[in-house]
Image (cartoon, rainbow, N blue to C red; front, top):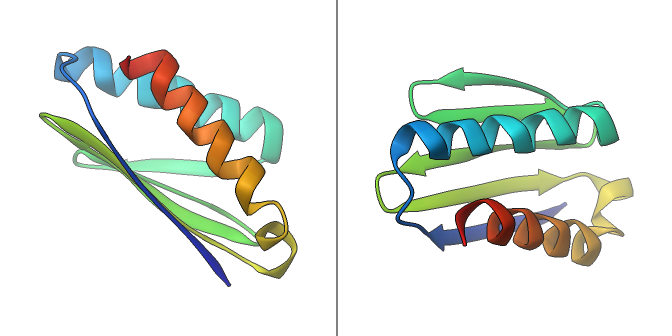
Length: 91
């Protein structure tokens, strides 16, 4: 099992940051069929072979994911995609 752990500082107001994370979750659902649900300020997501969360903090966004055997082969590509989306939404 491969792990992803990315923390991105931000200065985005929390309501806009939450909307950005929701947009990321929508893209994950459309691309990979990943389901997600909010628990407070943390968005938990999963599908077969992928599970994790995106924690929204006042000054950072923290993404953690566990990739099953199939998705572990794509870890570099998945990490790069997450970094691009975080850069897009959080500068």
